[in-house]
Image (cartoon, rainbow over all chains, first blue to last red; front, top):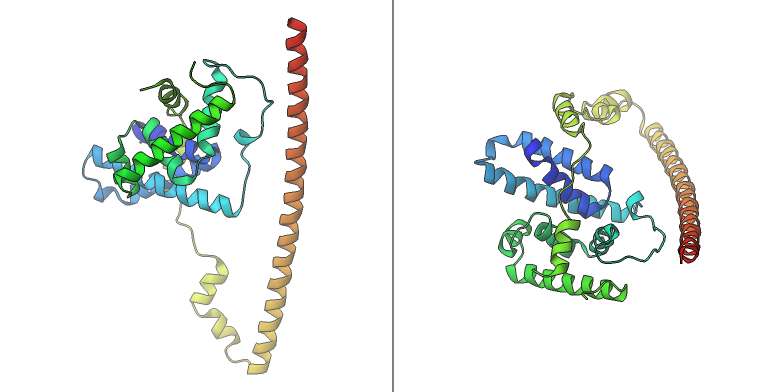
Length: 156
Length: 115
């Protein structure tokens, strides 16, 4: 479990942007794994299974929070200080921008850059065509690039 | 891979849950299963029917109406409490925004003084 807990927790955390909800989702996922241990065929299958169930639970939790909006401490506006490339705040800015993406493209970005999965693997996890995954990636990157440029953080 | 993708990889790196996370999951595994709520259990076991089944139809109708009124009043109270909670949340958010803007102002002044 320890081998996979950061993967499961981080997928939920980057998607939901709330530690408490992410830990709840992760806990549910591991309890579900325990109930389905008989169906797991190999360590690779366990990783795939955990990612798939985490993605589903995170989407469910996201939908539930949409019906009853909550504001995580992580999302409370910080003072608008100038941010330079290489500044530790750039990472936080990027996480915030990713959090503004719609559910599916947000999860595609998280699976691509947190888990380093290729579009084919992401498509299999999310049950969507590879072309859709690639399109989400391209659009999201373009969107983020545009927003960063407007903040003066584009490529120099 | 360009700089943005590299930055995203760093920004979205894996994070660890709380140190006691594994312990809590293990604890949940050994916790007794959630039992259904008492009312649901009573209904399922037919207790409600056994208790009120022999009452005349009119009495049962009155009982059902009274129960509906109590439930509706309870739901109304809950709605009011949710509304109060929302108002409190808005006030806290406003306080955070004001604090954020003041901090920003101070940071600007400090920056100017340093120059």
